[in-house]
Picture 1 (spheres, rainbow, N blue to C red):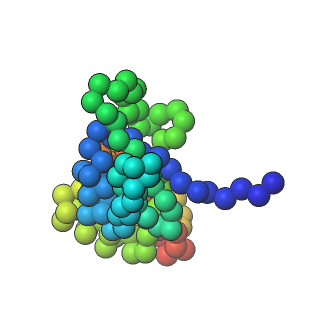
Picture 2 (picture 1 turned 30 degrees about the vertical axis):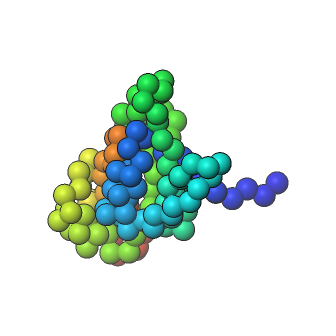
Picture 3 (picture 1 turned 135 degrees about the horizontal axis):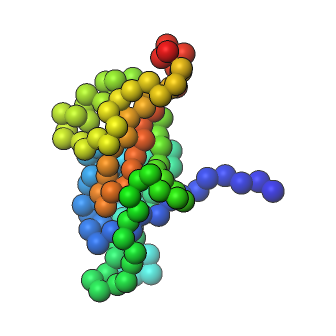
Length: 130
């Protein structure tokens, strides 16, 4: 069996707002298309596909989990020069749940809160971090 990561789905009542946040904060590419006669907004970020699905008014959905939680807790992306990225995000007004820190030797991380409480980890793996 061969398995490769393909995508992640995010659900929101504000598709454009969700897409704009990922574009502004993390540099995601917004991909617009039409599927089954309806407009669709997806993202490309870090070589991965993120599909944004609308939640219609009155549609019954569960509340977003609060991290840390069981199941999918956060999504993580590798960055170069994590300290510079941290400063850039701070200047953009990012909401951090954990400011940049050395988690363990060789790994420096930060966590920020995205729309609907989505937890995003940005990390750099480098031996210089002790």
